[in-house]
Length: 167
Image (cartoon, rainbow, N blue to C red; front, side, top):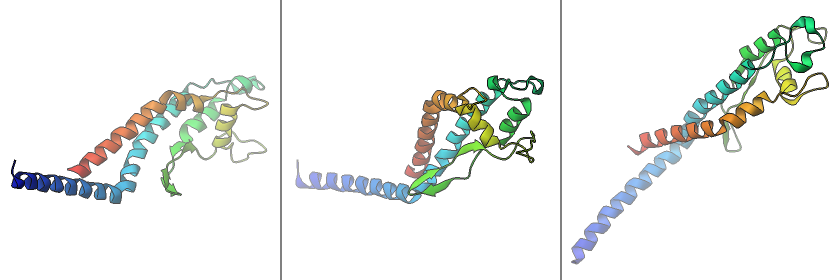
């Protein structure tokens, strides 16, 4: 082996390292955007799973007052179905996130809630239970059943974004 063979190998390796470092710099500059592009598709999977669990919630008729312990009214269910959404992404303390939840009011107007019952309150009362409603952990169930699927989607999205940068 001659000296020029060693030098030639070093030049090739040095170019490869510089190319790799250049790609890493591009990823660092674009890291927030890469993460943002991975979050929404994954959040969509979880939102769909939660919506499916809402669809499975038992309904009681308004005539069966006092039996809400075992379910919700069709208007409450409709309010949950219509109000489920994904928030705009936010960054706080270096963490980029989007929240999935219930917004607005359903059409069940009461003395206490003349504009309708808050959907987030209804969802929380169903998921956690109250003195007048049995606990039905529909949110927790959706999260448990779909966590791995969401993690795989995030990984897939990140891989796709990184491959685009590496080209």
